[in-house]
Length: 271
Image (tube, rainbow, N blue to C red; front, side, top):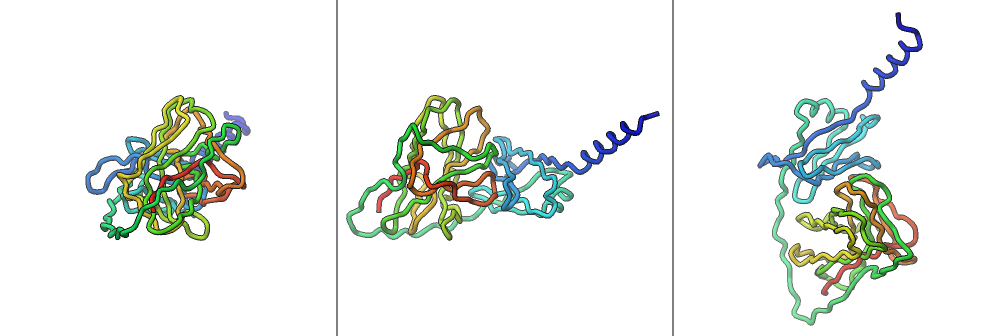
């Protein structure tokens, strides 16, 4: 005969397992059926999220989020959102989420007949004594700064960033550009993903932006996003009293301004 204490322990353990909702699944292209790597998956407005791996797989603990909404998004695809309680019940069988490719209209760019100027905008610090890093270890964690332009249109040519110390491991990041609304990032600007691989021992990041044809007519936000797990936490050069650091802890979580200093992110532009 089981002792009362053991019966209580078994009952509590069973209840805990019944309410836990660690959900695993795969995200695929709706047209081709191919797995989609590096899709942002997260609870809208909450600090809970992740990014799919190279094979499109993800794992997320949805416990106590039945009344929240879960969103899947990636550049080049239509985002998809679900009420968590509906998602768990409807997707539990096949565990596959299909994203529909987005259709982009060709942008008309009017080139002015004038002498173009070239300038580096943003924070050019290469400090090794002042640094800032990703505020959490969750995939989809993102940090950046707002960059103010001099004139419109402005063509983005090259992104640069400085690390306060060399990376101790290979790290994969995504470089993002957003429009700005009410002092915070709003809508993504590029029409394709821009991935950055930081090699072990590297202390500078430089990305050619010409292939992406990014043109802005107003101030914009530039960020780096952690999309793949590694054995290091990158530290970027930072400086006080520059454009404020803005970050979010996970995919789909809210943006927040952090401190009075900003990271050493800058962009070479022509205008």
